[in-house]
Image 1 (cartoon, rainbow, N blue to C red):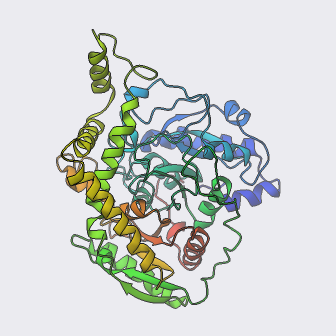
Image 2 (image 1 turned 180 degrees about the vertical axis):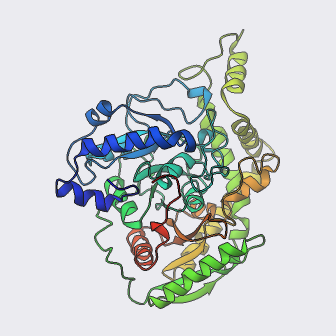
Image 3 (image 1 turned 45 degrees about the horizontal axis):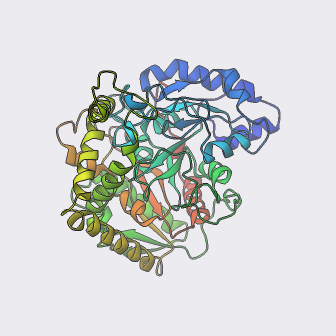
Length: 480
């Protein structure tokens, strides 16, 4: 079997009986054994027998394995969120997305490394180890879903699940040269996703092609009565309209204040401008738009995510599950020692900031104003999509940075989500797609953003671009 084979190709080989599910699972387990000591994308790879026993043998993804970010519940597996506080916690139920994947026949091969509790943009805050970028192992894969992204980029699995609060699927997808998809808020159930910022969190998908991402989305999207934020949307086949053609008279808006933002790497700008020209050749009508509220989105995202994170992580206190301090003399010490020893520095900082912006005397100044900005962003997006069908903007300001580059500059680390967090605040669907490489061989990504529930169009526009370009067929050396 060739390396970097797609879901579409695997389905064809399975249908022709050229490959069996057992052979495919064994192949990918071997790839993890061979290559993951370098990439360090997985916290755990399960044994072959338990993978097969946990999976239905029929369905659209039968025999096609994937990796699950370790903040998404898999029954009878450990669920750590890459944190010491949950290091030995075994969950008792499947997330809705996991349950639907199993019913679709997809073998779930393991647990992906991540930034602790999804708090980070580089997968450097994991309590266990740092994940590297397959294109250059001295650089980060992005985060917080860096393990999932790196595994797909290295060809260790054809697809993976991640999660987003402020861009944690699209940003690592851009840095790793693959497709990263964030759905409309509420399209994919959050039941079984460990909460960070509940009003922003979404399960997302990594793959090498738009078609493959659409295939996984088809398996897991749709209403779930166990998630109060789930939309009343019926499941559908998002691959059905992927014919390599753009919708007729497609209007694409280029977000100028994103593409030409201060500090943008010139190679990133050039790559996206070439992609825009490609869309022109395919018949798209290009408009140039400015979205003023984007300038305030990062600040609003920082405040809202940290406020909700502080609230959600209050449940990890050493009382009911997870790590528990053994030398606490009273309840107050139990809380403080458990949380201090169990949480890493980044998580503790975000909890403290979150508590501050929610505190008496400061909630109006920070949290309530941030929610007002969020409403303005949503309104601006609605108005913008009256004039265009799709937006194009950067995924990242620059290619992947060196591991440790921002250890002493937390603001620059936070600003890695600058182009991604507006869509988490607005709830719009967005997809990052590879569109080029820097001179030193690092991937560059661009985003396609659509109106609410425009996933079918986004996949179609992304697929059309990939039919005309070869960026998605290029893979890092050393993983053949």
